[in-house]
Amino acid sequence: MRVIALLALSLVAVAAVPSSRSLDRRLVTIEQYPSTALILMTWDGIHMFFHCGGTIINNRAILTAAHCMYYRPSQEFRVRIGSSFANTGGQVIPVGAIALYPGFNDAFFHWDLSIVLTPGFTYSNTVRPAPIAGFNLTDNLTVLATGWANIEGDRQINEEQLVTVSQDVCIDHYDNTHAEIKDDVVCTKRPDQDGGYCGGFGAGIFQSGILVAVHSNCYAPRPSLAIRVSHHTAWIQANA
Image (cartoon, rainbow, N blue to C red; front, side, top):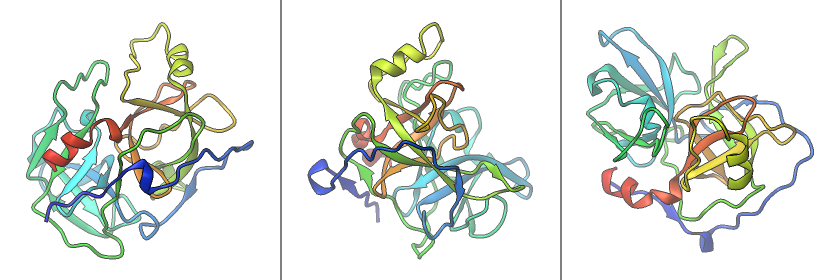
C-alpha cells in the first residue's frame, strides 16, 4: 500500500517559537521518532556500517539525500528500521532500487533527494511513516533535526533544536563559496550561533512531528543546508 501523508498548511498550525538559548543535542528513542531509518553500506552482505540517515515515508520507501546513494549500486546498501541504535536492533532489509532526483548535481548538491525502495515492511510502534509537509517553512521557525552523530561512544538517534534562516541571510553566509542556495534549500542554524547541524546527512528535519526537510550538507560555521520536501512532493509521491 503506497500511501504518503501530505499535510497542507491549513491542516497544521506552524508558528515560530522564539528561543534565546541553544538546546544541547540530546539522545532520543525510536519510539519518539518511529519514522527514522538508517542507510547502511555493505560489500559482502554480512559486514555493515552506518552511512546516512533517512525517513520512512510509506511501507516500502525511505527518503534520504541523493549524495548518500548516487555512487553505489543498490545491492551495496541495506536499511535498518525500528532501532534507536545505528549498529544493532530493529530490522535490516535489502534495497531493491534507488530513485535519484532528476538533475542531482553531486558537485553543488543541487536537488539533493533520493528515494530508497525496499521489498516492504510492516508498521509497528517503532516503524511508522512520517507525514510530509505540503507547506513552506517560514523564517525564524524552530525545527528539530534528527541524526546519528556519535554521542557517549555510540551512534544513537538524537535530536537538536534549530532555527530556520532567511534565504537572503543564508546566501550572504555562502558568498564566495561553491554552494548555490536554490529555492528548494532551507538553511538552519543553532539558536545561539550561526553554525548549523552536521550530524545527520540524509536524516529528517521535523516541525510539529511533520517531515519538512532532508538534511543535505553543512559548512561550519555557516548555517546547515537541507532540502524542503514541500518543493518536491509530486516527485516524492510519484516515485515512492
